[in-house]
Length: 321
Image (cartoon, rainbow, N blue to C red; front, side, top):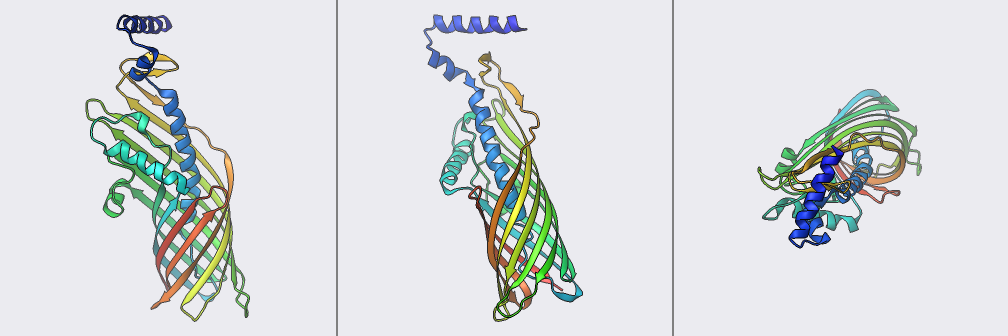
């Protein structure tokens, strides 16, 4: 097999010499996949760092458990978690170039970063006294995004984002004079996400697909204070432990180089599953709840990760009974 590959390489170089091709011409004809793998790995790092922020941005409540009755609340969240500003413009340009230009697009245009992660989840809470328990879930895909925020990262993409989270809260301090209500919280979030792009046409298409599995654990503290009976500002901090496993694959039908060996008819490559490191993040958040007709009907907030410099926004609508 090795001898056969060497024979193909020798034959290719011989033909190139006869036609007067330079080394640069050979590299232009045969795409080197090492650079592509490095770009996808960097892309995976960016997404892996976004997932814990995006997941824990869901199920944020201004409402404080402090009632001597069983109560129930449910609602919906919409959120966006953004990369650093300097990465956003390049990611957007890369996505547009990859999926929307006329003519043939190739693997070398795969973006190194994505500008944001969208989120749309449902949540509920049940509480009594100073305790409550919360659950949240999300199932988002490219079809739903196309109907709401438009095409996500160019034409020909596929995107699936599934998340489930659970937490328990306790009101450690009740409001007394100038002292705000203070809650402590512990939770777990599981996230699975898949993202891919297909370019070219049915005869010469190229594909990239990446998959992620994330486990995030958090400990949080939040202070809030009811003002004028209808607005409740809050400020909080979360310590997040997160681990993301990832994998990727790509497919092409044009000539490529793998480990400096030519494959004239292309190839399909799979990285296999790669276990991520256990990383820690510190996230600070602030926002307010609005009591309009119903208690804490609307909650609007933002979160900033001081480790990764990611910033997220969320808006929630809920009914509490």
